[in-house]
Length: 142
Image (cartoon, rainbow, N blue to C red; front, top):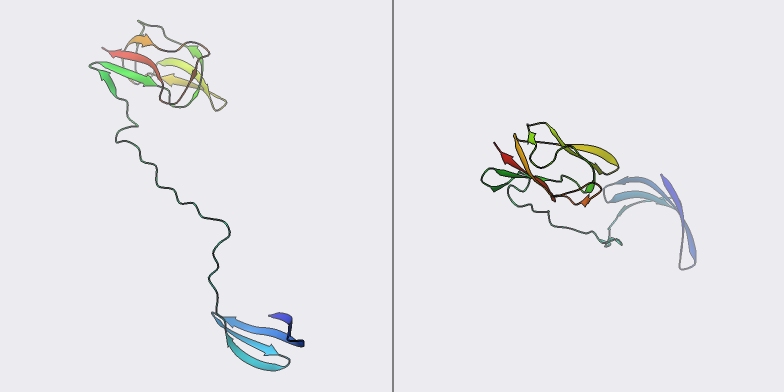
């Protein structure tokens, strides 16, 4: 299996590990066979292991919330830059209509309306930088 040469108190020993099962090894030392028990010392790892608590999100934080009766906030799903506005205040929109285009993570994304209604307020302009969950516009339900 493995051959080693040990020097102990000036004496040389040729050690040949024949078999290793669990913590018992069969070794041959200078032609004589021995069965030895191996004991492992528990060595602490050199690199510390970081344990972080799980991130807790507020209940319903992934849902669109009503601002007031009949108003819905349209929020930025990712941080990015506003590239184009397809609507203006007072425009009627239907579910699935394009509201704006923004660039996030080097990709152009269209933000679509999730509800039918009228755009009551737009809080962004072209080339604005937005963060995740920033309020982009309000849609008044009809």
